[in-house]
Image (cartoon, rainbow, N blue to C red; front, side):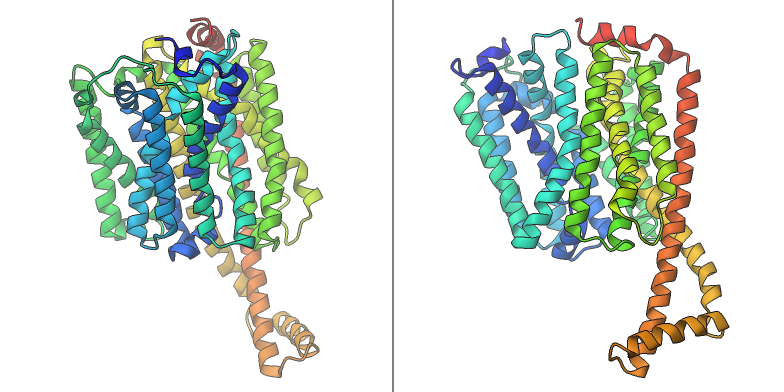
Length: 527
């Protein structure tokens, strides 16, 4: 059935494109609203930062599991009603989270939001591709889709900071719910009552595979996020989570290999370029997660205000835009994806090595502006080509499964990045803090001189002798702590920088990538 019939005849093409783009932001709001400002969200729910990270994993993990069965729902329900129900339920879940202080209930709502995030994504992207008549329609549509995914985070962060400075935390949820209501209104106005697909019964959904893969994802996420906090295998919960993840994951794989019509066809992994794309996705997202270290340093070490940290992210966003413009130019000019990746990962290596020297006790915006923007350029250059490369690595009939592999790579790369950086940071900080404290022992003459100087400084401000001495020791310990954080950050960035260089060498030597672009072109936009 023609996609044009889904929209009312009076709606111009430019308006349809704008409306589709706006409605696609629905997923970004669902994913990012509670992770845009983790500190405030954790404080409101009275939970730890790891709990908020796990809630993000729950939403994204449920999204990953749901896209396996999403098409069945889209083909069963009338198109207009399908979107109306999704956006209405999303608005309702946001309102409920505004009044939810129980973390278990909050996690259940985040699971529901994961389902609601997955259901409209692929149909909207399909609509968007159909609106462009150019041979580069897929490039344009994917750039808009994934560009919005990248660019949404800084906007959400700045909106969140403004709301939290001027209103109550609940207004975050109210604003997100209002966004969903606007989507409902747009669907009501522009969509007609025609179906996009022939109706297919829901009884053909493979619920067993959905439950198995969702359980594996959630338990695996729990293991990665809480492992360090619960001392890994000393915790029965961590051991149980790992066992359940491995068992259910194994059953899911076995089921897909045995059933006649698998929900996910495992034969997709026979293609070398798909395996390469999966590996690059995981490594890319691990490297991308180091940007959180920069933001943490701005807030904790450099003592920048939350609003300033939020505004600085527009520099990175500008880099993203520049990178995506370059990518669009490269793809339109048929530049090999291999060379695009080499450029992108080389820029990521340069960013990490450059920023290594910026982890100092105090830094200005002018010091970090260029490398910080450079990271955005690198991400913008890599992101869309990597998605398209992964999807095009297989024959056309395997493309949906390749898309799921790409989403899985982004999901597990993000979680592994969080877990690796968190664990490495805490481990290195502990080592450095212990070493530094040896040089600030109370009996050390240097320490005594420093304490005496700081104590006199506090006494000159009106503090008593005892209070001044306590404040002096507290300031020295704080200084030692910051130094250990900065040194740990330098080591992490150095390691990731060398990892990016290894990826570049791999791309230069990989034989499969040399003929990639012809396959990529034929599979995607010439068909």
